[in-house]
Structure formats: C-alpha cells, structure tokens
Image (cartoon, rainbow, N blue to C red; front, side, top):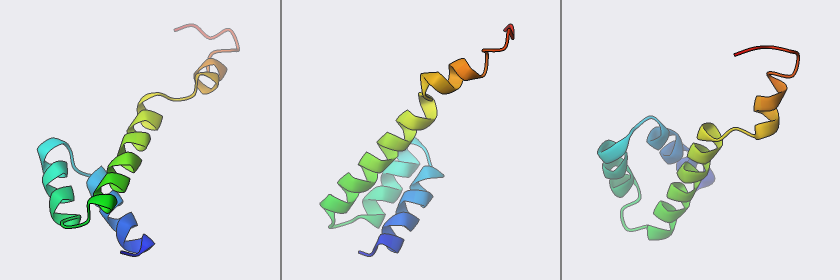
Length: 68
C-alpha cells in the first residue's frame, strides 16, 4: 500500500465515528493488520492532539489580564 492510499484511509476514517469507523477500517485494511495498526495509532495520536492541546498554548491565550 502506498503512502497516498494510507493517507486516504486515514482521512476517511477521521470523518467517521464509533462503529462506522471500525467497520470502515476493517474493510479498508482487510488482510493488512500492520496497516490497520498503523492507521489506528495515527488516529489515536490525532485524537490526543486535538483533545489535549499544549498547555503553553492555552496559557498564552489568557496572559493579558483576560478573565473567563
């Protein structure tokens, strides 16, 4: 599988959630467990980056006496 094909699978998977994502990945990566593991790892890393932004970025948004 080429990088471009893996990128398409990753991008498509990002647009899906839950069981729909799992079913899509099972079909798209059928017979390629290494690819499935790699795509899942990338999805997990992406989720942690989106859900847990760097603390310095958050702190920087409120340094000028802003109140919440």
